[in-house]
Image 1 (cartoon, rainbow, N blue to C red):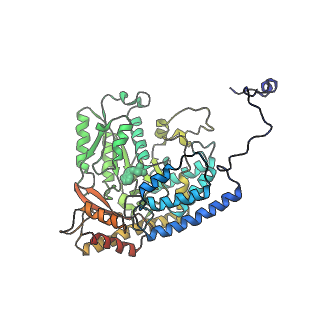
Image 2: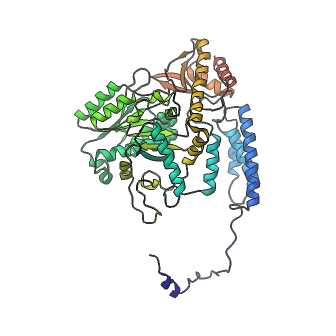
Length: 491
Ligand SMILES: Cc1ncc(COP(=O)(O)O)c(C=O)c1O
């Protein structure tokens, strides 16, 4: 309860706790946490120079971590946090540990998972967001940032061909966005789900995706409370794409057996092989059976930026919702997913809540009323600044360049007798060595051990393959040559 000005005037002043003297002044701020401006500026400048130097050394050195972990752990144990240490050497120490203690996704010969080196505008965004630290839960406390995020979400929704009133929000990850899709699907499928949870359904629910889906779906069905048995992994067509006939049959069969199908998630750019499920057919099956159709375009969604490549995602415009991760092919700093839906009212229904202490209650806008998170960082600024600085055409060039990098790798490997096993038009290559080479796992181990490049092992259509993905925006032809040399030397 708030007290009126009158009652405040007449109430006795607060008494100090027994034994505590109330001084006339506050203690000074803790300088280690809030240093003076001159010191901050000096450290900021130093940090900028040190990081640039480290980036140059990384590009010339090993892709793999080279840190002696036993020595590192001993040093780490020395941090007992009893005595404060000066920040400047701490910053230097931290940069050195990261320079030697991580697999370098920022290395131009990291041909690995969907982890990009972050674009410069997105790094600037993190700096600005860190300095202002706006609370993105509510438009009341962060009117401009919330509008910026909503603007970027709408821009991507339009690019995907969703209706003008489509909306959504930024998420920490593709997994969070996919989880949001399942919560929406459950909320739409059964009006009492919000109150009673899965008990509201007359029978166990089921959701459908392909056996080439991202494995986070196993955790999603678990945490959503529908259980891992609810996940139906549909067979693929021999080329890593969900078999639409098998999907239709399984949905019909489950329905006949009394289950409650709720969601189909088609993948646009599978994690292992960059394959695109038949999106229009999946949407059609979902419509026929009244299911929510989600497209997990966590990585492949970036192709929407390119007029040349966006046709590969035809059918995405029919989806009820989408996942697109800017921290993958759109090269922002980590933790920048997007959930986009053509059903904004349903999204608000799924995440409705009442909190009188919040500074706003804008049902269609406030992120705390429309998403999993409450307190949230200004994640969307990373994509806003990058997209504003590069334009769609800049991102198109970035995405098309990655596809070209993979074409160059492919051409070189084919002439050396390697075969290509995936037919992806995107920037992932699954390849097998000519006869006489060691097993793929051993090739990958040898390539990584020499530190010249990084590639992955993956399973594609039941076979172990070598997976090469272009994620770095600055990979050169010399880097491609070096990768191919490392792969062929691994025999
Ligand atoms: C197709 C797909 N979906 C979802 C995810 C999970 O995304 P995140 O790692 O951001 O949770 C990935 C990650 O690679 C992915 O490739």
